[in-house]
Length: 178
Image 1 (cartoon, rainbow, N blue to C red):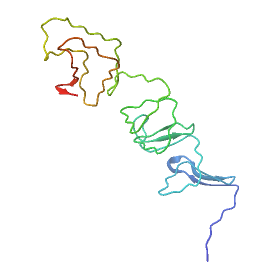
Image 2: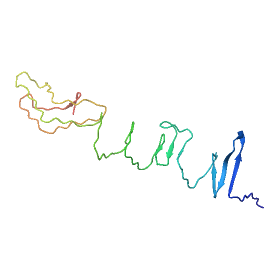
Image 3: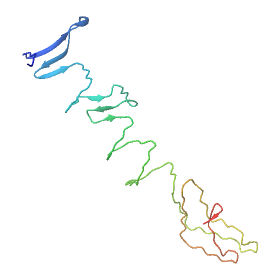
């Protein structure tokens, strides 16, 4: 046997008269249930329409918790997103790109660390043809500062050596001949 409690009414509600004030915390009207507040320990919602926003109980704008507004705006902390991200603007701090990156616009940077090439056009070095040179004399043509990453020197051109003692060209990195 199944028991039932049924009420037939156009409007049904609970009235609370505590503290001398009359309130209706729960009302059913035109087939819709209205609750001023509810605490649900464990719930499941198949579909939901949020009139304003949904947020965590610890939400503090710009610093804590999460929030989703009905306009699509949202705030989250420590988000992991799998898949594509589309954004019109934004600010990213301390970002690592693990794979290749294609930039279709202009890159502006205050500081670049890595293998960046600087080219100098038409470097001409002339030393006097005096008898004071020897086979151990080094003549500086270019300097590339050492960095904690791989560097490349691009030499595009020719070397013309006209003297007895200047017949060998040696490229050194620190004191290592390359």
